[in-house]
Image 1 (cartoon, one colour):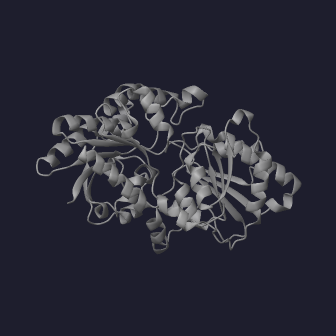
Image 2 (tube, one colour; image 1 turned 180 degrees about the vertical axis):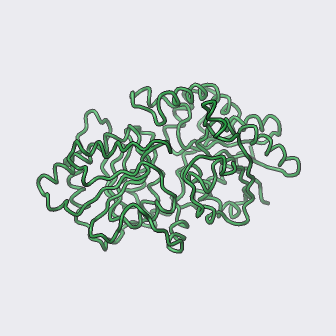
Image 3 (cartoon, helix red, strand yellow; image 1 turned 135 degrees about the horizontal axis):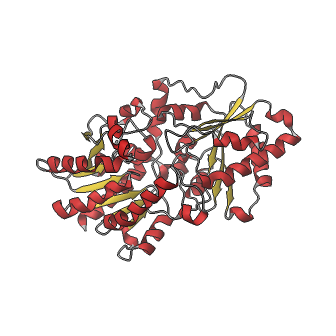
Length: 432
């Protein structure tokens, strides 16, 4: 018997692939594990972000998708409101009420980083007696920037407003939740310390699934990435993803090691280029802070930064066209880089700099998918010598590099296996 799960993912394709990565990876497998998904999202016209129409091609044609409107950002920004949740809340409520007049739903699943919409889970539970599951892909109420004095993405004002809302809305949303999925083992500890009514049995740490099908589709799309020419005679090393303040230790360590090695062996660096792509949180922020940082290491002619996000499949093509991939970790031990799976599937040499407690360390090492440098406390750690050894390894890799990844060990991280675990959670929620 097929159960029906209503998935709340406001910015579902074709916008902001990272925010709905878990859901998009799971859609082909839900039915196999006894669940029929129905997706509720916002009409893309009301969502700000990088549009990639190819993402629509990854969604199975039999999936039912409900699209609702929101207050136009052109209108809301006149009142200094850009948050999609605040603009869309009444429309989401109306869409679900209308849908439930003629249809039944067994479970509601929130998979989004647009956290304020999660309060609707409790509202619908009270009104319709439908249990709900929350997926924490990042912390909602987050003290990281207060503890470290690092500047938050989006600026201090936006951060203070969002955290003020979170202090009220997070406990409200969590009070009646059936289950919580997280990408980091730090989140359950944090939430149970904060809210006495939560118990360990309500949590499961579940990383994102690997996008194998996206790489299978990539060749047929004939994507032409615009970042670099892979045949121009240079070796292109790439980092694709947002850069937050907590990553600066890793980046500075990398730049220090490159500078040191380059001073000894300048000829080795004549044909190397480093590209940092999609580094900024806001679509309105065009500052090239990584390029500016590279100048202090005399690497500005080697390092190029592209602050804005690029379409999802173009980013995959960048990884595939690269000659090496960099994975930059945060000094926040709870940070989990979901982008590790596309990096592995690109089958290129990988150099990762990560906190020792990051789940990504386990993934890379268990699959033998790349070279990993770890740290614990940035204040007492010097990575230059260790990084120099790994950089020499990276420099030695030829254009015909053959991946040595243990693909059998990679199987637990596939989208199908992650979906099986999701559906097992859903089943427990229904049975209880």
